[in-house]
Image (cartoon, rainbow, N blue to C red; front, side, top):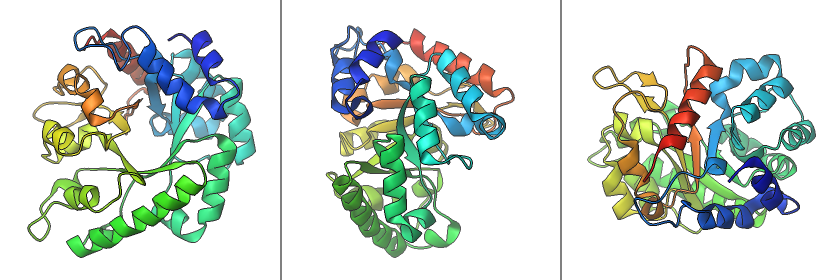
Length: 288
């Protein structure tokens, strides 16, 4: 799906939502194509803007333009860098970008939920993602059970505002705590109708989780994924296409997982713009 088609699909429909995803599936080689004929639709390849955060601080307008020029059409925010939501909305629209999602700290949800929802609606997000838990939030399985119930409530509030709530993992959710895995608690004790998951494929592998087994045990729970490379042996984060993560096999299970948004990320790139171009080029080359 080229940018012209993407903009046509998204025009006038809350930045595309249902019509956009349907178009991604219906495109030749889209998400509903048979295995072996499926390609990752270009319009479904997004970028977590944390990757280019330093450039955003200096020049948000220019950086978003460079992201669009690199071929990305979806972006996920991790803060607005002191820009008001109305300005962020205007900038993403000016560059033809779909602000599909945003990372929001748990403190912001707790302190100003109505403000968070209002900002998300203004910018045009469809997902709000809880991206991280401080150590004091992850001391026990009971703590995770309580968090799961809080996530259900946040999911309901998001649903009522026309949004979806999700959770993004790191590696610590896969470490054994009191005989159980926190990620299993969060999956099992949240309502699939209210809470989705953004599966960070680097961190689940780094934490020792089995990607395939989670797809099979929880089909459809992972609407979004973070795509970042991991170097064998060192565990170092690298550009997508470098390292040892078996992307083709993982993406062949996209329908089982529920993947609808593929978001490139690199936490510490040496050259952020080079990283995002190389990563997108690799993803475009995949056939699965």
